[in-house]
Length: 175
Image 1 (tube, one colour):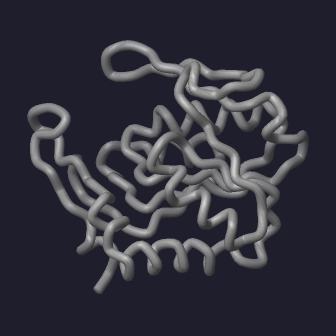
Image 2: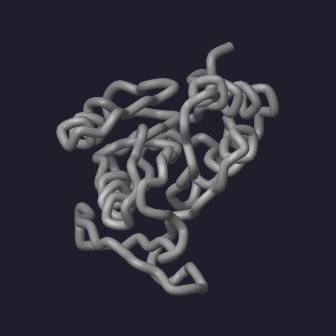
Image 3: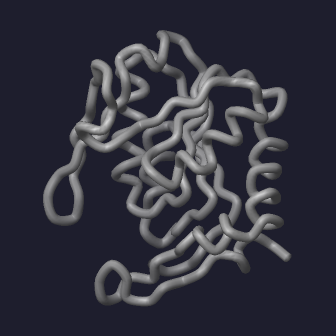
């Protein structure tokens, strides 16, 4: 059974007209979670990667075991004010305002090969901010990896237009 069938859709969340793709049903399914992590591990085994960077918060759940299985370090990108040591951040636009993500200043070295991981790519705003933050630190992104792509929303195209390679395990049409 493919992982897509293990992802729940919640209509009109967080607002009217949105079809929220909820990976918690995939994560609680031991077979689905194992398949997801193993498919990602198989894709990146043998690829030169220094760090797997996960975007808060569901990206952590996937990036940490992937980093462990690949034998590389895991780095969190978090929302403003959540990391305890010195950070560098990047502001980005939301539908109604702005937000900020941050990373520790010592998390990435110049020239590090980075795999960026999150659960879902929709508009691409957060992923784009993470890409810019990693690049500002001198990291080289080998690929942006997601479990779910919502191609009709445009995030994948947005990242690819900036020269990023993008991979996802499954797609859901519509928003």
